[in-house]
Image 1 (cartoon, helix red, strand yellow):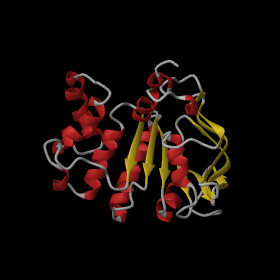
Image 2: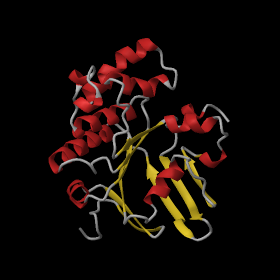
Image 3: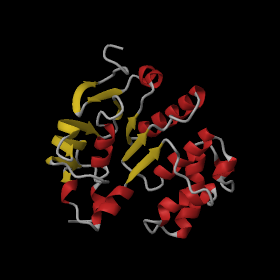
Length: 243
């Protein structure tokens, strides 16, 4: 297969993510996903909601190729990621930006070094890193924090660093897994506006959340999972149906 990093940046396909009849069952009895059909176009902003244990994490791990489905296919730009070789899997994952609730920053690295790390692992040249990291920090609103360490930043600022790192390799897809879970309401809204701005530039954003206020306020596409089943897919929905 050709360089998968190039494949995930190919823009000829309209449907970026395509789950076709995907089922994942753990230990033969614990339901992850059941016959899931999810189609996400380039440039969409999607909230993934549902109770704890409903299947949201399974969806994310399948998309990141941390898991393989028991049946069905998962296509990214028309390419079946279940057929990736072991060599291609790390390369594929690096082409997707990920933002998590706990920020995931290296405590002993500066903010500049934390963002640069995502570029170093794909062998970006030092010259490009020196040019682009300040641009990324400016994009997320903290250009003056480059020489600070994570412990010197607020939770909202650390999440901005995590977002900058997720954008470091110009991904088509950003997965945000409870990115506002540790933040106060005002800071959560700031992070959401930042993700919206990123989405407006064409990046597909998939956000897992338990925050009804954010979902109800933004009125984006909402996919709800319940016990492994896709029970709702609203184009402009709320946290619960008819909200």
